[in-house]
Image (cartoon, rainbow, N blue to C red; front, side):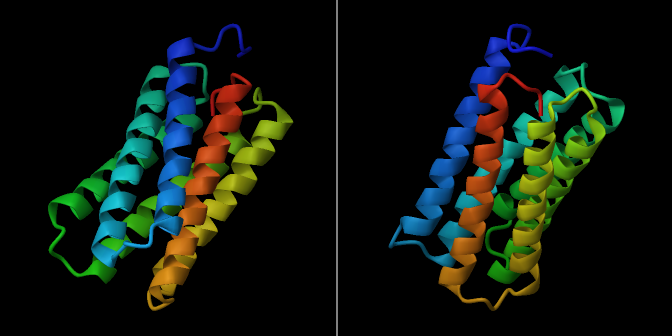
Length: 180
């Protein structure tokens, strides 16, 4: 799909979502008043928004292959459900909630990799962006899930990196008018 055919509303949503995602990443990293409960809530809200966009694009954009659409729908719905669980059951242990959210992060990274490999009509630069970005997101999510005792600042750095990468990939795709 060319930039002329790319729906302006979806492009605007992608750009806005990308910017919000990067701002959330910066807020996680640079806010001196962050405590673990706030980190979980901000992560959950960010993952919820990203999940809604992925789910919506998976349903609405028929130009994508069935595999890519299915992965977008599944990862978006999974991210939304896991984020809602973290928000609704905020009195559970922080480690458990972070585990839920890091699983959602890994699911989103895996989805980016599948879309990057599966879309033949996608330009090679965007395929590579999706694959590398998805790999980083999956890896950062895996690190945060495995090493829960990293230390709060290190965990904030890893999670912030996830949000930066997700936002940059979204903005890159939207700026060129590509459906990723």
